[in-house]
Image (cartoon, rainbow, N blue to C red; front, top):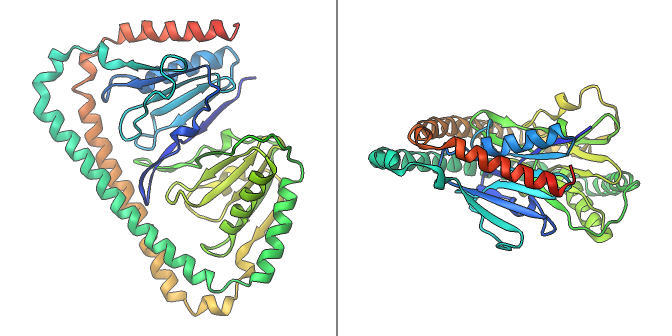
Length: 366
């Protein structure tokens, strides 16, 4: 049965738009087609149809979600990273690395009737500017979230009991990596989810199964969870253990979980509160759990209770505000699409899509 995974290559973060687009596929990919064109030209639909086609044929498909629109795709990978389609427009501009040999640009703007778009120049310019302003405002709120988060890390970090932390950290990492295999491939970095106009979304359930060995941890910011992930990541890099590192959707410097395919093992932080990992993992057996808050000096934490409460409130409010602003951006984007959709020759685009799918199908020997 074909596997269909769903991940995120970019996100709306405390540092603005943050991209792991260079991690979608490696240089070994047979062909990568970069889609260009304005809003509403059919880039996402193009990718979805190709994915559906190969999924029906029993070929694995990896979908890369869009952080600006929960219903859209930014990319799709077919097979064992053999073929790739991706959206190469702003804010994640992608240009060919190996033009002609691997990479190809498909400009869907070649399939529109420009005479139907030109009369709406003023509206298109105004809407585009409004969308840009919305994203800048959302990023300002997320920057404020980052400041509150750093403050929380300081309050909890000053109350860590280092000896207990280091002992547990080393033991858990050794247990997690025990069944892994050295492949000497670089780690792959993606996002664990995305902050979108529809709120915070993750598709963790598409990456695991009933046989996944789950190592669950939790703890307040600065309590030691990120030390665990950093230590694990370093050991994997040193030992040549391949894994996928999934970063936090708001702070990409933090890690939410690491997946090691060779051992089908997952090390995950279920305590961040941003994404519903607990609900997704409900009913699955956890191989090991660790609460890093149990390793804190509770008396010292209690002394900072009011400051912690205030920082948490600022953080949560910032997330709420950012989502609302992204919803406004989505509204303007949908309106912008209305000027492009009627001008598109979707029949010609569909013919091109079928040609690409047929070529890839032939190369896969299907």
